[in-house]
Length: 595
Image (cartoon, rainbow, N blue to C red; front, side, top):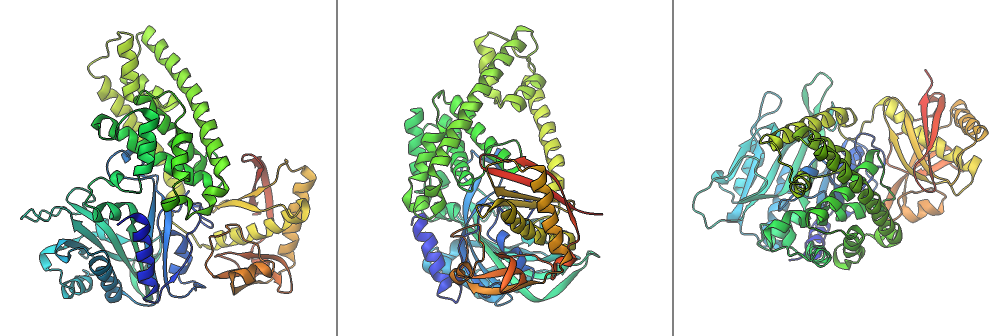
């Protein structure tokens, strides 16, 4: 079975069971300042998992592209990926454990034809916060999974959430496939994600609410959130222990083999080829969202992916530009990508030009790094610590630094690698510490101040269009407890007078105490009624439309998922702090609530 068949059969299975297929969300979170990318299928559905009514109903299914940056350094093995597609089905206060587990078992055994004797599952073992999940285990046993293939694990393995410090959370049950059932012994490893037992599906049961007092109370209407990784499941179904051998990856792999004159069958080339394939696929999708390489946030992740690709190509002895060549293999893949995600074709030129431009920039940086290494060798100061500094500054991997030393007949000290590794670990720990603040609140934060700032972005959008023209469209936003950031399309720097005018209009809206109302509409009806939408092709058939002001003469009308205040007076006055450029044809405003 190939990836397209798996995705179609998954969606059809759940549609036949009363689920409505919803379109995938943008990789860039629409209303979430706590993370850079959509990292799971449930991410864009957080407001609805928190209780907001979804316009498409209580049973949903989709295929969601995701980006996870936490494992970038692990990419190169047979199963870690930066970009991946996640199959998901949800029950929003509808069915619960019995139906969810039964659906999963039926899909795996009847549709995918997986032998039930090869299935292992894990369940929550219980602790002082919540009891042991015997209910899930009993359901599995009734379906035919014996107790010796049901494994109880702690919170670290079988619990999801809450998204922030408080909110919905609960136990999960994970489904593993034994890829070596011919072995008589059962040596299931707790939390194993590789090797003999491969996790293919996770069913999360959000049945508790964690309070501000750190207690766990049962929800009146629990939810179900599930996720199945396409890449890993396709590999299992085809008997591969290496994801990169599937139809998903082979066109990309072959393009790399051609460009580098190497073979994936050569074990010494496998890791570089995997990294190049993974990183360029992820870069293509990030670029398709309009993100440009930079030294900040999503742009920095994109830049890092491209630079890591160039370094790996250099390890293979390749000095030609490779990113654009490999990018084409993704963009031209009709079965898996080009025929499914219209933003790829729409932004093809921008994607390829950006890959080429960034690679050229980094190759010049690499030349600077080579000169720096030469200086350290000449001074007799190429050590593990200085090599780590070269890596961090210029992106040189250890192998290339060692190669340059060897060329110059420079004898590295016996503790060179040990000191390099220690310095790199210290750098990674510092980076994690510095970034922890951004992600510490988890996914969506629907606090009072976040709600105020989010509603204010609608007012800013309206004011910008009044002052600058109808060509203005939101190009992204980021909200924290301290300020809002609003990105929009505009070619020129705003004048001081324009900024003052925009600020005055926003605060006039606040003073007018305008009501904020929500309606559910068919998507095309919403567009025809004048509602603005920023992610074309990313909306379900029925959408939520938020109107600020009178319904027949609004100051703002947008398709959105919230959160919003009830009245603009609830926001308070706002000051614009500064503006800046964020690439070709885009501007950014920062603003803050007045004390």
